[in-house]
Amino acid sequence: MALRRFLLERGGGAVECHLRPRRGARPAPWRIGLGRYGSERLHWYRVFSLWPRPAATLSRRGLVVVGRRAPGPDDLTELTEDLVVVEVGWTAEDGSDPKEPVYELAMSESALTGFLSWLESMPPGTPWQK
Image 1: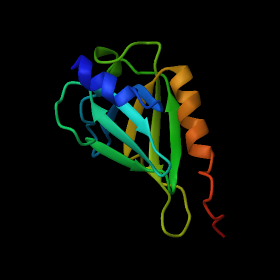
Image 2 (image 1 turned 90 degrees about the vertical axis):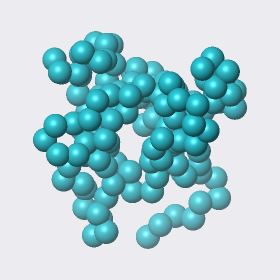
Image 3 (image 1 turned 30 degrees about the horizontal axis):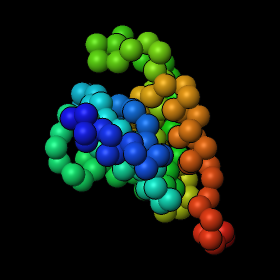
Image 4 (image 1 turned 45 degrees about the vertical axis):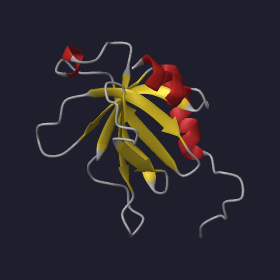
């Protein structure tokens, strides 16, 4: 596990964060992992897995923050109080914001700052969209 973590973090652009999909009224359990930033996608890898591929891939195009909150009482069984929970989703084809989040990410304040910077910046050479 230590070697896997080293390999994921060695190139930079990786941050520890928890992730869970938001489907239905009862959300899935939180999973701890590492998010690795790319120019177009955030690849999320489980910490306790030997699978070489990401367990989730979040495309940067159209990704928006739906909400931000402190961990609730139900979250604190799996998370710590110093984390921030960010709900994310993708814009609809008509450009409207998502009505419900698709994923929730829990990370530290400093990791959240990096995530928001990555989300708002545009990779070099990317043409502006009309």
